[in-house]
Length: 123
Image (cartoon, rainbow, N blue to C red; front, side, top):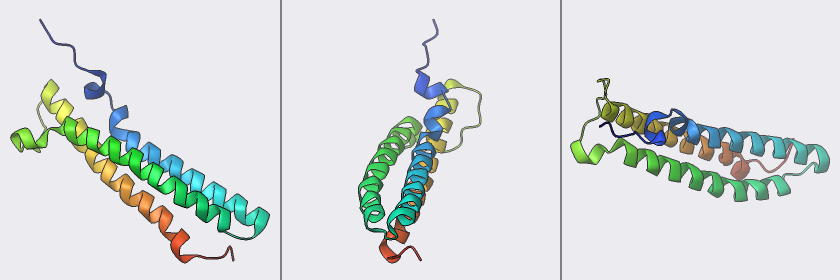
């Protein structure tokens, strides 16, 4: 009898959720900043929004990256090659790719937030 594979281990959506969180964060930050600059001419409200949204986005990305790390299951066998057409290799590949995409998304989130530290005006 075949054991049913959980949806998380066979779906590509779990692999790309961290970049999706980053892209929505990117959209929200830049749209809010553009509207704030157009309406008030200052970045005070936008910087506050970035201060609130950045930890939320990083927490979501961190949670998704941690789940991908657990799915990858690297520490059980120290295997990072997933080239066989088996359920285990597919599960580990999706976890490995999701973990790496999560790291890139976290770095991207930090890079999107950095201008709020250095840029003080809309000009």
